[in-house]
Amino acid sequence: MIKSGGRRAGLFAQMKPGRVLDVPSGGGLQSRALQALGYSVVSVDLFTGAEAGERKVCADANHALPFRDGVFDYVLSREGIEHLENQVGFVRECARVMKPGGQIVITTPSLMHLSSRFSQLLTSQRNLRRGLANEVQTLRIAADKRLYHGHIFMIDYFRMRYILRLSGFDRLRVFTDQYSPTAVALAWSVPIFYAASKFSLRAAAQKARSKHQPETPAPVAREILAHVFSPAMLFGKRMIVVAEKAAPGASAVEQKIASLAAIAGARRPNDGVAAE
Image 1 (spheres, one colour):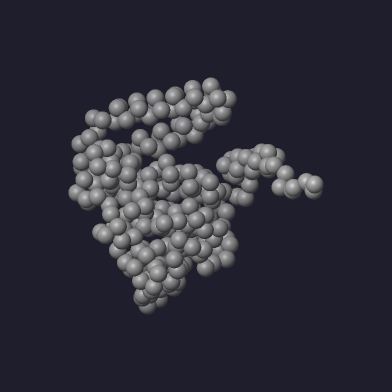
Image 2 (cartoon, one colour; image 1 turned 60 degrees about the vertical axis):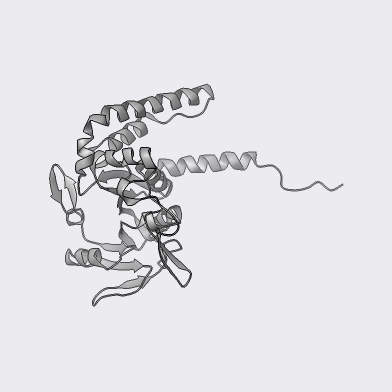
């Protein structure tokens, strides 16, 4: 469920049913709900325990997923990425097993809402009531060399966007499903955060110009500000990001990566050693 136009709506209920990878699937609640909507679901989790009618694969999402390229229309990762050591590898693997034009839905506890921002300022933690992350309380399970972490790898919008874009995803959208009353009460602080963000963009642009480096394109900056200062990000307890897998070579980021790789190759010194 997401908040849209002041109402709650089912995200997958608005999409055309297809083949979904639910990872990590946990107890399978979301997998069963998707099946009820007409989706064909494959569930993946670190721990086994499939229920009747459920296709469940035991796999570690920190490593390569045991599927061929381009076999899923959708990937759902609900409340999982904050537990993963290898977030970049995970998103790249999701992109690999998805069809071009497929959509990924990632949900995670939000670091972006106003209450969380103030908590991070005071304690460097998302929530004042959750204590300080540590190796004793945060590690949940250690079995057969498999580690299940608590919320130690929290990720904000900026890192999520960066990973998704570099993994070949476009058309990012942000949602939430529940507002934080504390964050709403801190709405008075929005102009302060907005002014700070605008200052940061201007200062970075000036520095880039002085060093003859590329600036953040205006459309990118506008989209980031629109997302970060949307009600979903300012007040939402959960960050829900939806993105579409671009066709190979169609992403502007892929073209940028190819350009940088060509420059790096041209600058690479000769590996050979001249014979004396």
